Image (cartoon, rainbow, N blue to C red; front, top):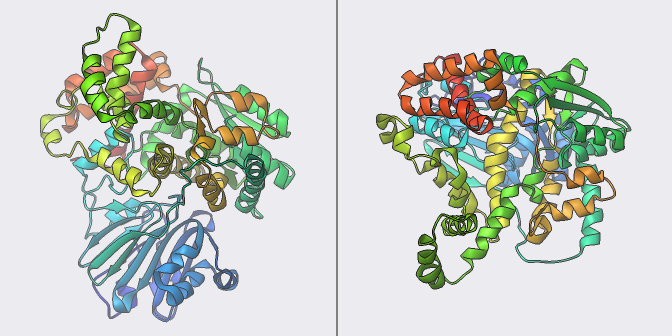
Length: 602
């Protein structure tokens, strides 16, 4: 657990850094006695010498040969300390892998916090002129008496909007989270924030397919080999592109691979058939498990308790059971395929948004003076006219705002969803402002690359990685992400946009380059993943139904959502599309479960 407090006293280093944490040993700093840092799976390193302390959580590699040699002899934290003495902040440019870093110099009241490039790890903090409280887990931050666990109305709104709390915000007042590749430098009450790395994007169109296809094969194998090292590992297998690629490369590198797959006895949700295709193709040893409604009911309170913020991604359930099967099989490590869609262009919204971008390229005078007035006058009677009208309505909204036109909270006016007093206490534009910051911060200009950059932060760092990392920890195993190897990320960023999305074809280059490696059925399948049929099961299973309705009933009294809105949500789930309305019921249910598990209220 990476956690600590750099604060008020400077006469004694043992008082300056004070560890705290629930259920884990914290950082312990003692003059002349070294720095001890403890974490699950031995992924932490500490170093304290000559007044400089470094606490490091994660798996770090060094691009600098001299620092790599120090790390091999004395540990990665010692290498970071030496690098900081030599290069200052530039030492961050030499770090590779997933890490959360805290570097402290108590005598000068200096603290450096930093997060890895892709946000594989997590680091929260609360800063003030008196000091900084920081921790890998937000619970370790809020337990400090100078911070406290005070719920943020804005964080609650952001959660209901995004189904998690997007960084840099958190669910707690006064507590923030570092963004991927971001650092915080605090010196005696003054703080500086910045980004030590940015991807180099290729916005122009180029060719050289054959050379790049060969390079992709090599990089994928290197990434799996680096993630594996000497550890025994299995791999998640959904039957999609990335999990199948990782399993296949693991079998090639290790000579054998165990795969772990989850199925659902619900029409339209079970993807076990594709996982079995990969198993046969690569000669894997399969481990299959079918999640049941009873499993979901049993997991809900565990998941709510496990997260340090409310988390509404329902696929956390199958992820947990998949990891649990690996633990029961005696494997300490799973490789996950997360990240491939976000670096190679695999999400359906990329192609859909490019259809709208064609409209944005028309002269503004033509759009505003001719097309839009005409579209407003189109009758709604015929389907083709309704689609044309809807296309213009959506296309006139610029990116990234257009991505949110499908958000559940946009179905009704916000005053009909939220309690009036709650709504007055929040900035309803805040979630969009967070997205705009990530979308426009990159120097990329092509919409595909900008959407990818946004998804690195919001889809990966804020959502998918948090889902997999925490559920794996809950199950008692470690997880690593070969698709987020820096060499692969740099390679994918340098691909031209049309290599990622070509017309309606997603991940065009990746699929073409792996024609001789992946089964044809997997190359042509539609993207699915570990989606949970909660809405369907809630309607049919009495236990799940009671758990969900009891949670929504308890949530009525919290003064966040209007009671009439919750009633409409329940009625729509019962009478209309159970899968669709089940998503928002899950999100609200998990918020209530999290609040109750952590004994919190506004």
